[in-house]
Image (tube, rainbow, N blue to C red):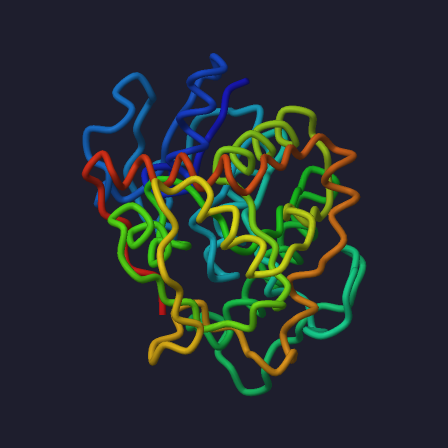
Length: 297
């Protein structure tokens, strides 16, 4: 497959490019060249910004995977530019698109968040993150129809990434771990390698529409136990630290966000490896001398 990757040198994008090159795909990267310089010398490199994607004016691809689409106006510009020269357009979305944060087992057909009144079309902040992703999905449907795929995910765990770095480092170093969450709080995650493989699969197979790319639901305590078991020795846990990096409301007002129905993604070939396997790889990466980037704010 001739694959265009928008982004591709940070975290999940890096995992996807590694998987694509492993599988023999012909990869072209489009990004600003500000991170990951020197990565993937065998891939074609195009330089540019989403607001001025002139470098994408020529070329044809069987599929595109978009990691850098955060603002609807930019996504429309790119989609319209590529519409006649690309097969399937796979967009990295988020579980934050759902309006109902409480009800469990919602499918991809659940109501989505609306656009806040009085907000500029090109606004971007964490307050409108989910709403902008909804706009991006809708724009891609308008421009590409059945050639648009949206993969909605939440916590993504893997080397190069920040999610659960504040767990991985204490476990790798044998010191106290802080976990400001209810032990019974529901959680869904996905190994970055599994998500990368799924993105490639739905792009190559041209599977349209949205997918909840998440694990089955487990509790924070069960997830932590799996991580503890793969460390050299368990570490003490503070369930009431001053800092809460996960940012999960403890009153249940966001519990439904991490109890989504993933049936459609599983039927399309999503693999979900065990939490312990994900933890072992992440902890090993830290013990190799790597430091996770800080969690986003």
